[in-house]
Amino acid sequence: MTSLVVREQVSLESLHTFASLGQAQKLVELTAVDQLEQITAQWAAWPQPIWVLGSGSNIVFAGDFPGTLILNLLKGRDCLSENTTQNTAIWRVSAGECWHDWVAASVQAGWSGLENLALIPGTVGAAPIQNIGAYGVELAEACVGVTAWHMPSGQMRYFDRAACAFSYRDSFFKQPDERHQWVIVSVDFQLSRTFQPKLHYPALHDYPEPLTDAKSVFDAVCQIRQSKLPDPAVLPNAGSFFKNPIVEKAFAAQLHQVLPELPVYSINTAQASPDGVETGPVEPVKLSAAFLIEQAGLKGLNWHEVGVYAQHALVLVRHQPGPGRAVLDLAHHIQEVVAARFGVNLAPEPEIWPLQP
Ligand code: FAD
Ligand code: NAP
Image 1 (cartoon, rainbow, N blue to C red):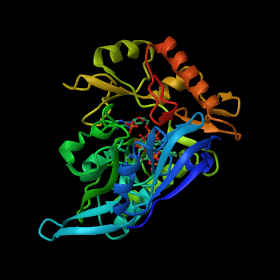
Image 2 (image 1 turned 30 degrees about the vertical axis):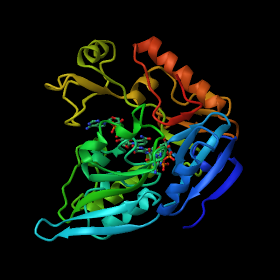
Image 3 (image 1 turned 90 degrees about the horizontal axis):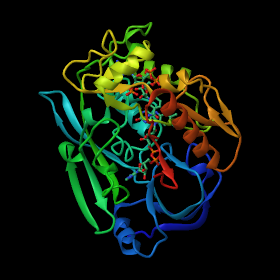
Image 4 (image 1 turned 90 degrees about the vertical axis):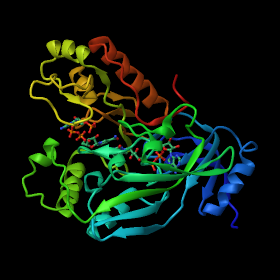
């Protein structure tokens, strides 16, 4: 058994893509599955809280972290089985693998299923936490299981897709009683040799070149994302800072009177309705948070050393080095203005330390 590498008083700046200044009390590097027992043995003794960390692309530190970060560095990709009749295979990928590298490798090897999720920052192990999604595809569609270690009790458990309880940017692992209790160790994917295009998002539907296989969709998604989103290595950010609000259809209809251009989407079919509100039998609907922030006049707002990205209202960016407090103040300001103007509560998407009420 290899010993865990443990470091004290570690700078947070390079551990998360929003790059706020600050320190973590303790950082533990998890590089092998047989080290999980040591985490459980130390669980009560280490500084609290204890959080697992991937690439830090969905975590914002708005102050020093007084607890323990477990940096997931577990590596490995294995094909568990291949069904040559159905042209499918099950792959098991370790949690510390880079998400985009795994997507690129799968597409390169002729597998389809993950191409719409290209270029999402982060690790494979974090992907189930919020059921990552982009361009009309969610992780839940390809993920058939998750293996996770329960840190307090030291139990390894296999979660099939149903047990993961995936929903829109949510899963079992984000529920209040489960949050920060599990280390995701590996994720199982079912991929197909047969290309099943999901091209209903406007950016892909209207793409100027033919999208006829997984590789062309992968390339298109990379190109679109690079043209729209700031690279965290150049302009620190945490992607979408707020979730798209899910509201009752009747409320969306009222809002639509005030904001006729407001995009309203049904949740399950992932299709926009022609008039924006007639979405069929599904009652809850999804609004565009970016649209609301832009309509509130906040796009491009600068706030001390942070701001709202001028090209994308949902992305908060860091213009200058500094502690994390400013982004929290900016986020609160956006929430207050949008709530006052439109009666919509925006919930942050990233994990924020200190935990928000
Ligand atoms: P971290 O930020 O390190 O952690 C996120 C959460 O997961 C934390 O609560 C952490 O404790 C927990 N966690 C991480 N690893 C594990 C593990 N192994 N076991 C248990 N818990 C764990 N998200 C989307 O859904 N779609 C997008 O299109 C998208 N685009 C983005 C674009 C940019 C520019 C950025 C910066 C972010 C984007 N995101 C997107 C958000 C982010 O990339 C994803 O949520 C990603 O899955 C986070 O991975 P990570 O390794 O960085 O997780
Ligand atoms: P976009 O394509 O301009 O769309 C704007 C918003 O409308 C998105 O939030 C998207 O919802 C929604 N949308 C568009 N077409 C839709 C359809 N046919 N059915 C249902 N919803 C639809 O968005 P973007 O900002 O450029 O991002 C593109 C994709 O990458 C989106 O899926 C987005 O979620 C993802 N992304 C996520 C993050 C993050 O940090 N979470 C960051 C960057 C990009 P959804 O967001 O629900 O898809």
